[in-house]
Image 1: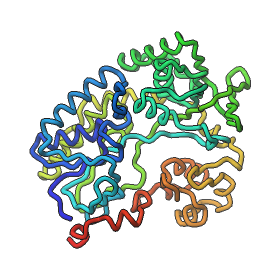
Image 2: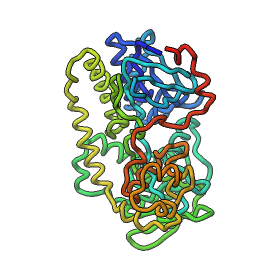
Image 3: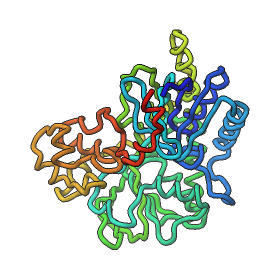
Image 4: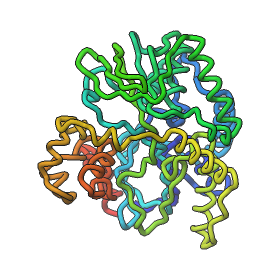
Length: 414
């Protein structure tokens, strides 16, 4: 079980930057990722024969990082198609999938990226309704847009990015429904790189005649994928074949605590949502912090680049602020909150005021599906006045008995 390596969970920009930093300092590293290849959401590896997409500047930085990783191949092991089910108090890490092992490394850096937020709405679980992130993943891997009419709705600059990618592939969305009104004077304080990226997306969408409705909310989706919206000027509707929802991002920190016999650190959007521009810098910061901790030294000061990106992201959050609480509080009682188990707001109300984690999971079945509350914990907490659903716990996700049986007996007997 004892392993002299440092485990990095996540092979995106932050995770690979942490791994390279550690390896260049002489450490042995095991990088684990559930995808088929390194890259994370930003640099999702395309299928053979498909050209990689994304902003040229981001691609250049990623290529340079992977070249550094290649030079450290003797010290960096990468296990793809592999999941981590948690780190216990003794420092044991259970890996399943492509690499099934029970290891106790010298330390762990957690870099899973961000999770996509989607507000519950009537009809959001209908066939043909997905996240905007899922649409982008399909674009990056296949290079082909989905067929039919596509509607994007929710809030955040990511909607513009996905809309522009669809447009570039010849299938512009029928509209983008944006709940906020981000074109405010405060936007002038954003870095020029943010402005340049937004302008590129806006020009592409305008040239294709895509409507971007701001201050508009998608209220309900009815069978047949009719999206009913409320705008500043009244009600309206759009017919679509595919609807992509997105209501911002949050750190993907569900489940994994920090209390262990080995040092555990977070990096990238899994620690704090600072965006793709800051991911590699934060991975480097985490790698240096792990080196300092293992050597008994204080962690180095945070880079100024991260401080600048934090300010930019805070300004961006203010620009995209809207009445999210009002939208939640107006939901009808039959709205599904937990997609995995099909549990509704009425089911949550039936548990009484301030239910315990046991009530929520055992009786209510909230957060008991494959995502283990990553989608619903935020909304359950809002309506039930309890944060227990997303607290650290092992395992992070359901484990098949076959996975446990596949762990080498040498690991278990250590």
